Image (cartoon, rainbow, N blue to C red; front, side):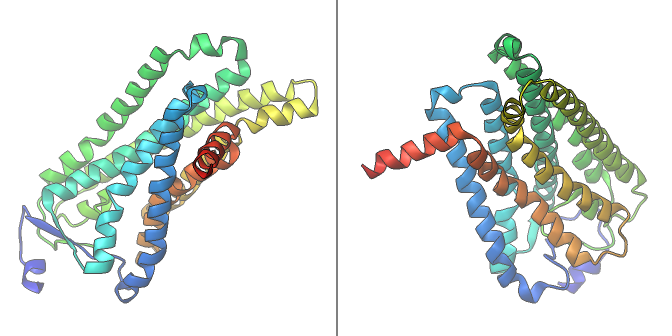
Length: 315
């Protein structure tokens, strides 16, 4: 194995995923919470999709976007966790070069998709609160479909250059990736050439997507809060703000860990590598696990449908 890792090569057939550097001996124990979060995320998002499909009253723009969010979370889990668990349990570290780039695309693409979906949900909340009488005429099914297509195309087009640029690089240092999955910068840092274009493009994507999306979210919620504070009674204000509660929790669960992870990778050189790898993987798992819980707990229609489902089965 050592000869494979140190011999010069420009087009590696495989990469070796190291796992969590320095914590290899604890992989089996670390796999327990990872596996638990994976199961919760899969079950939770499948239940959300099932409930929305079966309940006609939930066939509305907010829940269509929620279904998109659930599908995105499922893809994020399934393109990372199976390989991660195989590393933890079976020491299966090899990944084909093309498969690595494919995984890179799907992870970053669906991360961008999730940000776009949260932005679309914010637009839905803005229209519902600031223009409630026109909500059904503004957010028609065709408009929702067009927004969904734009969100998907944006994610694909923005992220596609990352694996294409990575494929062109010569790799002659090592084929060991100090990570649990093929993260963009972790892969290109193995190249034996100038990677500034790759680095700058990755930073551009982060600033363009996260920066613009967060700005849009902030503007939307400023307008929403202004509309809420104009309501005549405290009960009306609390009730209206409550309709945004689950969406706000999902935003915090997605952006705060992601922002911290990105900062530690770019400027946190003193952060231990094992901590960064572990935290990056947790960042990919936490939103898919929490989103169905957040929307299930805070959305009365989903609660009622879930209760009726289990009550009906019990009888």
